[in-house]
Length: 308
Image (cartoon, rainbow, N blue to C red):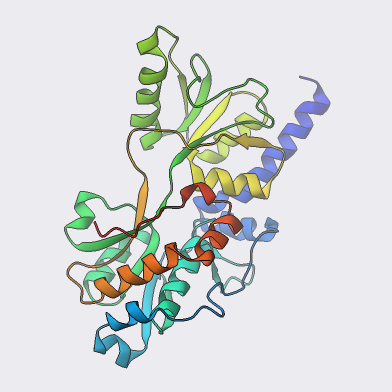
């Protein structure tokens, strides 16, 4: 690789780090907001009418209060973060929360809180619900009602234009970066390697374990790895922030397990039926597709607001 090409790759990688560092730190989140040209503080629920069927399920106590309180950790673009003003919540999850409130004819109050304090806060009655890219794990379902709204999934990012012609079904023998301690490293990539490669007599995928996605994408930009196996929303966001740096393969990787995320509220809450009805109304609406498209998350659309 020529010095000039290396320099361009390094510059692209540096810019990419600014766009992605928000996924892991507040300081990075500030820089990502500075670099972003896709943030939008417009309220997606503007002009949306309440859903009468969902409102009929709303308990009187919530009608009397008139406000829903939603808990989020606002440091994870593109699903949950703050706009350049450092005040306005933006991303898929704030869009969904605003639409929920509008469908139920209520106002919305955001509470920015650390991820690990959300469930105790809901259990203690400080928050009514959360929309924070939370998977409905068996442990969480012991204390929460959880309603599906999005499939986050995992994908593979490769060099722009995919010059090596890598596919989800043929990464055999390739150097594919994963992040340390992730489910991609511990489960998904080894499984995909077995299903698509070694069981067919092909060389295994060579998983390159790196400390974080920033380092993984830096190495991809400089061609030190052939691909990055990571959460689809983060890869889609980075691609939107730094175009023509790499290509995110579609569809998402089939890991033979789902990556559904769900809204959460206290287990057995009288709000659950109304919330589920409002989420289904959103999934059936053009605003759902509009939000997904704006944040580069179209592949995560689901049709049913299932109560786990």
